[in-house]
Length: 77
Image (cartoon, rainbow, N blue to C red; front, side, top):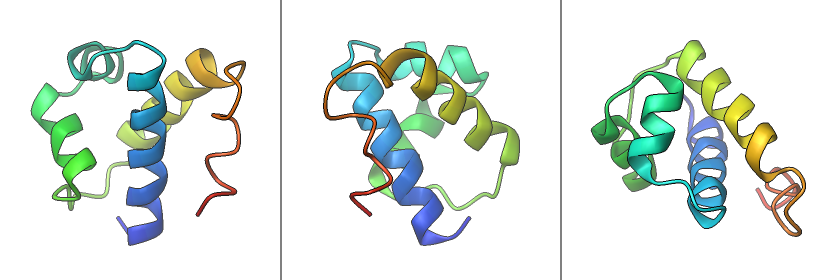
């Protein structure tokens, strides 16, 4: 996974957390361990996993698109 992809996932997870989801809830929704979400947030996640990236992206779209300031996550990069 390249650095820009990591930043996108990290930004989406941060937005999901701001929307009220816990790391555990995010992990359950995308079918990974909470430690995987934690590693993405810390920048220590190095695996390339399309299913995980798409799961986080879909969860982000479901929960954050209508929250002011979160839909521009890609523009901030």
